[in-house]
Image (cartoon, helix red, strand yellow):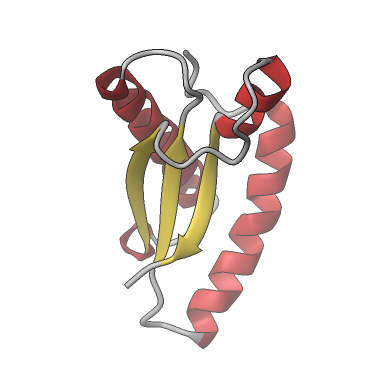
Length: 104
C-alpha cells in the first residue's frame, strides 16, 4: 500500500536519470513508459490506482533530477503483469514496482 520511493530505489532512479537524460539527447523523439505495478492482493481497481501512484512517483522523482517530463509517460498495469507468480512476500515484493519500457 505504498507509493513512496525507498532509499535503495532512489539510488537506482538517480542512475537511471543520468542514462535517460543522455538517451534523450541522442534520441530526442524517444518516449519512455514508466509502468506502475502491484502485487496480486487487493481488487483490480485498487491495484490500478496504487500502481498509478507508483508510476507517477517514479516519474516525478526523475523529473526532479532533470529528466524532461514530456518524455515520460506513466501507465498503470495494477496486478495484471506480475514479474513473479508465486504467492508469498518475496514474490509480492518483486511485483510491487515501477518499470521502464520503450514508448510509442
